[in-house]
Length: 97
Image 1: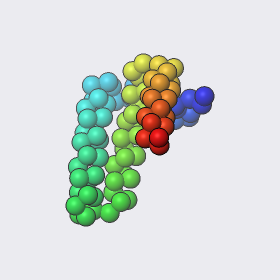
Image 2 (image 1 turned 135 degrees about the vertical axis):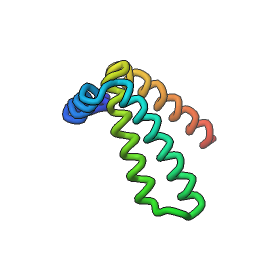
Image 3 (image 1 turned 90 degrees about the vertical axis):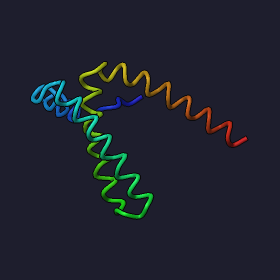
């Protein structure tokens, strides 16, 4: 299975996390997730364009890359990713029956 992060992205995330520190970056994760939630809510009401949701989702993705790099590391995240994707596959198979 391919890693959840490629090496270049992992290095970029590590640099961001070590440059600004754990406390600040954890706050940024919270902030970016909140902004994505807000954007999705506005999209559902037709108040913003899809591109804004994509922008906010990318911000969350960048922060998740930092979390993966600094909390648990890719090996642990890959383990849980595999478990969760297998669970989703099984749930979808049940829906098809």
